[in-house]
Image (cartoon, rainbow, N blue to C red; front, side, top):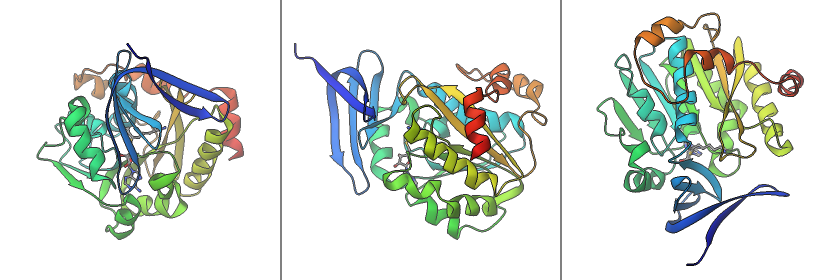
Length: 284
Ligand code: AAT
């Protein structure tokens, strides 16, 4: 049998490969190159422009961490905006909260959603929840046109800042996120990685922009085996709540949600950053 390996460049000098059984689908959409594969180790996975987005084996890490940290910080979140996230994993975690009334997902590329519904029901399976509205447009334009003070929570589940995701790392975008959030609003953003310089550069740029806009800004980390270096970050920015001082962790535990990565020890521990990361963020 032939060995079929998927390989992506994590830097110009480092590559990451996964042995695959099948290249299930390949297309160039209006926005990006989309590929779906089947593999022994990671199950079904998909890539955009040659970068891993989601696979069946470690998606729980990313989707737990993008969702539950904010939800444990403010249990009164009712209206949520997800930007990107076409695979549906972030929406799936949000739908587990009975208290959430409205979930708007703004994804630029409808093809990512349709293909995920076909090949990745594990993440896309809750997109039909009656509280969910799917909007296929650019997240940057969406927040620009949205009325102010509307959402309690914005989750930016975006690609890296190359291609269609670039605008989601701009000052203009973060500024409009601030505007469309309520006075208690929280913004969680895909914050890249501190390890390889090209990603660390983007991490610092994002942090310096958000720091200038929100009164409370923190960064938290998690382990993502298939993203470059495996060390990945989300940003936590908020108008009112501090994720460590204000989170009601006992209340979250009482909800009885079963999670595979997130727990309330991780909630606290994820904000403890290595010295080199702290130094980079302080310089940003
Ligand atoms: N749940 C983890 C999956 C992703 S995919 C990110 C999604 O963001 C993609 O479906 C892409 O089409 C969408 N997207 C990109 N730009 C925009 C935009 N301007 N407006 C709306 N949606 C957009 C995240 C993976 C993170 C990878 C980290 N290396």
